[in-house]
Image (cartoon, rainbow, N blue to C red; front, side, top):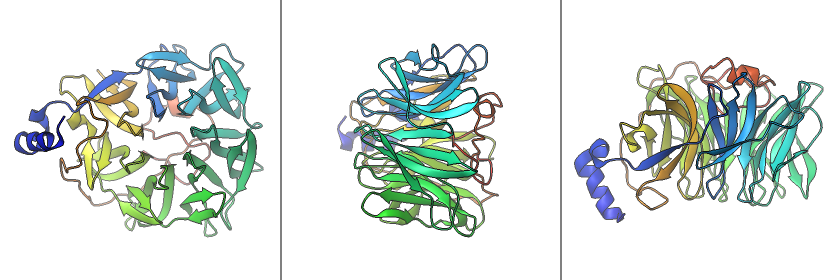
Length: 380
């Protein structure tokens, strides 16, 4: 679609009247009551976790709703897939006899990356994996190099760190504990080591992904304690605001700096998935057909084609989705579509992944992307 024409339509008629910008694909089900997509490749393959009819959480990958159960027919009882690359390599965590193993799935094969107590959270197109190792009550971030695990240790003075994103240059984003006991986002590279990032005025910050330009996305507490999504560039955190509620959480970022996540809406009763683009936070529900049956509640990843994955309610049932741009162009027109809101904060929170998927998929709390070990507070 011609960009000038699109801008004219949106500004003169409004988003609702302009019609859907995205189409929604249901990524499928493993027969249970919920599914969430956390990872997305450059060619549109998704990865995540879904419940079986017996309530167990299984890792899956999906392309155009053709869903594949990665946990079935293995020795794992449960699993979660966190990332996938353009070659179809899927990474995540498999649970065997109650122990967590960082795992890679490829062509119907399953391989543990590291020993028990490990979690794989991201993979790049070179096949490098990022995640966390645990031992003796501590967590260390790791990356792989030529298939070997490289222990990145922790931030200075802290006892816990985890990597959540890795770009095609091998640069890593995550967060870790610092000397005063709070948690700070970081970026890491082989040449520079850890660079600890600041906050948006509060105590804690958390980086969840990194693009090939080195920009990290995540969330941080503000001065009053609420969490706001951020986009980091050159060490500076940009507050992305909210969709009218008190808190927001950033998760995925592509090479254009477009960021996705979720935010509480006005009234703080529920979350909506968002796209942040060119200075504006957009409710993704305003960009799909009103009669689709979907409420998009969380977005976790975006690729350079503008495709987005996450989870939402389809006729009241939690399902994983992929959004595809309906106009034929990968990226939305670079013009503001609505006004973002910086709301009065409430006590901020950050997700707890209690080293057990039962709490994630059976409690049915409103959760963000699973984290492998307990940060200070539960996130919504």
